[in-house]
Image (cartoon, rainbow, N blue to C red; front, side, top):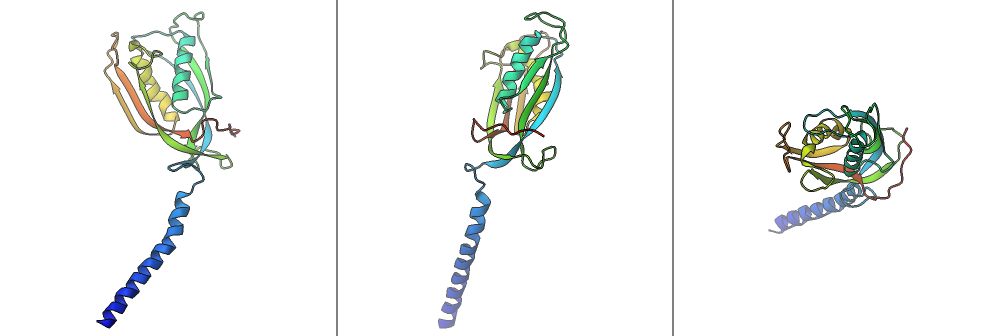
Length: 200
């Protein structure tokens, strides 16, 4: 009985020692310098020429510019982005047959991801859920279904996203209230006033 008790005590001591050795490793893995659940990210430049083509709604170039800018900011683009109309033939406020805008912005990418500068300064970031619904925001209207679909196809891939969900009941030439919904988790900085990092 005495030998067995020694063995039990020995196993307990070894287990306690293993826990003590493992504790600093776990603490170091969690300590990233940011808030709990944060991860290291860097600002990466993105550019796009976005041409809207649809059947149900028409837009002036300045109207398209305003809607695209709003979506970009909601998806986590840095505030120093530029969205400018180009190739427009109609006066200000008048629907254009082919409204288009150029987009230049910086978005967060995981540190070390392809397409990011090796010497770019990292910022603590976290995942945040973003929802764009045509029936909840006065900027969006029932006829914006096709626009939201094209944003999902061409603009959303410029961002780092996960758990993307898209629902659409849009019918060409018909106004469908609440006909589209886009939800995604995007990388955003832990601090809203994170200082811009010079892009390379």
